[in-house]
Image (cartoon, rainbow, N blue to C red; front, side, top):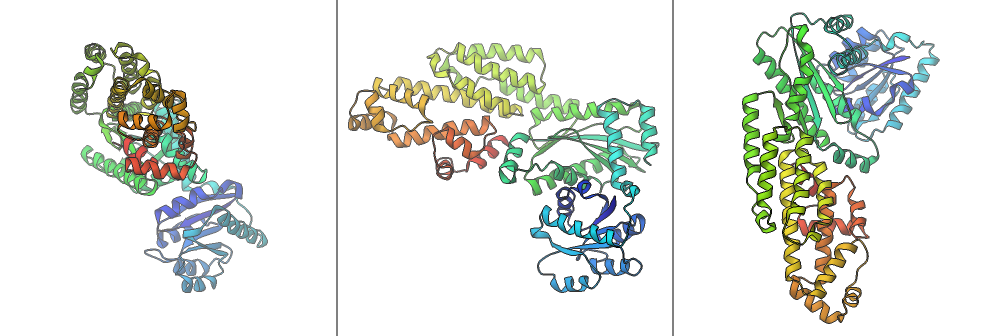
Length: 530
C-alpha cells in the first residue's frame, strides 16, 4: 500500500478530498494532512509518503517552495497540485518540478481525482517503488484506533478502566494528569437533512461531516471524534496542562461552537450538543458518556441548535416554564368543549414526572386522540386530522414543536367545524368530496353534477358561502395538505406535489410560494427550526 499526504490551507477542500476519494480501493493510505506548507514539509520528513497532493498558495511556505525543497533530495515522490483557475503562471513553474498532474479545486470530481492518482501510482510502479505494508501506520490510522478504544469503553462498555488506560497508552495517549470531558452531538431533524442531499446528488454527506468535525476539533488540544450513528457523534476531549476546570469548559465550549458554526456554514446544518462534567480520575470516566447523553436529551426543552450542560437548577427552571405553558389550555380548545378533560390529562402527565422525549411525544399524540374523542362537535371532522397530525408529531424533536403542532391541530378542527355549520347541504357535500378526492382531477362541472346543481348556480353559491371561488379553494386546500406532508413526512417536494393533486412540480412550488411566501423547502425548514 502506498502512502499519501494532503497539503491544503482551505479546510473544506481538505475535508472534500478525504471523503471524495476511495483511498483503500486505490491501494492508498492517507497518512496525514497539513494546513500550510511548513507543516506539510515536516510531515513529508516524518512519513516519507509516496504521493503528495498540494495546493500552490499556502501560508508559511507555498506549494512551489514545498516542491522545490522536496525535489532537492527526492525525485521519486509523485506530486499532484491543487489550483485555482487564475494560477496558470504558478502551474507552469510547478510543471518544471515533475508534477504528475493538476486539479482545479472548484470543479474537481472523484473520477478526475482518482484518474490522476492512478496515473501517479502507475509511475511509482514504473520507477520500481515498492508499496509498503507499514504505510497505514499513520497518525490518522492511530487516531482511528484511539477513537475505537474510546467507543469500546464509553459506549459499548467492553473495557474496564484499567484496560481503557492500557489500550490508550499503547496508542501513545497517557491519561495521568489530564482532564477529560465528553460532548455528544445530535444532527437536528436528520431525516429532512438527508432527504435534501439525496435529492441533490444521491450521496450521503456523513463522511464529510465526520471529517469536518474532526478538522475543527483537532485544533483544540487532543480531541477525538467518534461516529455513533448517522445522526449522532461523540467528541472526547483529553486536555493536558490545564488546572482550572472553567478553562477546560471554555476550550471545549469554544470548540463546540466552532463545530456548530462550521456545520451551519458548509452544510446548512443545525446541531445540538450535550456536554459532560470534567474528570481527571480514570476510575470515574465511565460516567462521562451517560452524562453527555442526559445533557443532550434536555434539548427537548431547550430547543434545537442548543448546547446543553447538566445544570440541575437551570434545567428545572426551563422545564417548569414549559410545563406552566402546558397547564393553560389553548384558547380555541373551549370551542371544542374539552378544556376540562385537557386539564385533567395534563395534571396527570405532570404528576407522573417522566419527561423523556418519547414520553412527551406520546403524551401529545394522546392529547390529539383525547381531543377527538372528548370534543362536543361532529366526530367525523377528526377522521383524517388525528392520523395526519400524529405523523407530524412523530417528526417533532422539541417540546415547543409538539405544542405548536397540537395548537395547529385544534385550529384545523375549529375551522372545519365552522365550515360545516356555515354551509348549505350542496356546498357541504361538495367540500366533503374535495377532502376525500383532492389528489384527483376535480372540475367544477363534475362537482355541480354530483350535488345536483347547475354549474353556474353552484359556482355562485360556492363563492358566496366560502368567500372564494372554486379554483382558489382547491389551491388553498391542496396547499394545506401539502404543509402537513412537508412537516409530517420526509417526502420530497415533487412527491408531495403529486400526492396533493398538482401534476407539475414547478407549478406546485410557484403556487406554494405565492400562497405562503415561502418555497416548500423553506417552509419545512422554517417550521422545524422555530
